[in-house]
Length: 155
Ligand SMILES: Cc1cc2nc3c(=O)[nH]c(=O)nc-3n(C[C@H](O)[C@H](O)[C@H](O)COP(=O)(O)O)c2cc1C
Image (tube, rainbow, N blue to C red; front, side, top):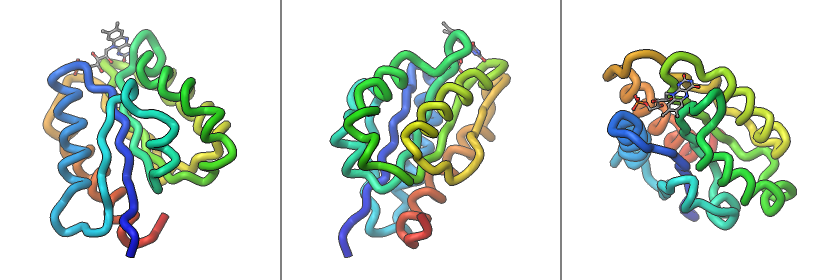
């Protein structure tokens, strides 16, 4: 069986968001899941080749000034046209860490993923308010379910 690739593109500029990214990555690499390679890159590192070789993607961003991070926007700017015709139907999930909102980021990301015709596997995880352990737990659940879904061929 050929190994599938789960790409995690997470902007993690603070200790809290690093914790979220680590929860996504560590859980996706759970020992019970086989046949799934998990590739974690910052949006600045990730490019079209990474997207083209992935079978599913988790996007994670902070909300800054009512919008996704500039890092994630830069990622989309670089991958949009190289991927447009080749990644339709890509299963993806979105995590937003916002202090008090998150809606502008959700709208902006979904506008782009709709243009790309990517397929959300669940509603966006919007982690707003005071940081708490439950946020990391929700990310762990998401990372594991994405990897398990790929392993099982659900997506
Ligand atoms: C320049 C700047 C702009 C921000 N703008 C927003 C915003 O528009 N909406 C929001 O909910 N949070 C906003 N935040 C809060 C960040 O989303 C939050 O600090 C970030 O997700 C990191 O989470 P943490 O503080 O738990 O580490 C902003 C933070 C910074 C530094």
